[in-house]
Every structure is written in C-alpha cells, then in structure tokens.
Length: 77
Image (cartoon, rainbow, N blue to C red; front, side, top):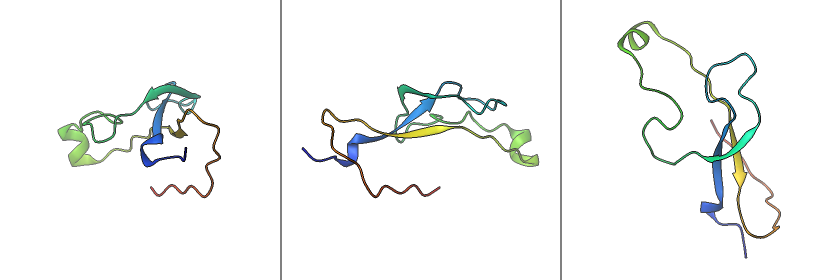
C-alpha cells in the first residue's frame, strides 16, 4: 500500500513553548490540520502593535501500517 497524503502529519514536540532547550523530542501528539490555535496562542493587542516572535518546534511524521520508504519529501515554510 503506498504512502498517502493523509499519512504525512505534523507532530508536536515535548514542550510546545518558547524555551531555551528548543522544545525537545517528538511526541505522538498529532497537530490537527486547520484547527485554530493548534500551534500558537492568540496574539495579544500589545504583541500585534509592537511585534513579537514566537517559535515552535514541530516534526513531520509519516504514519502508516507498512514499512514503505518515503523519498523526495520537501518542506516549505
């Protein structure tokens, strides 16, 4: 069975916050596609006016029942 589009998912890191450790290793928590605030919290009025940088570490994961090899993957941010 081939790898399908729905098999490629983003998974959360151990710490989904701005931390010096960089977020840690991947977890099994899948980040829901298209859900509001799944990666970042709402932007406050002060941050919107003055600016702020928030970083999150996420991982791309291929989740299938087979051992097919995933080749030629690209990520564009």
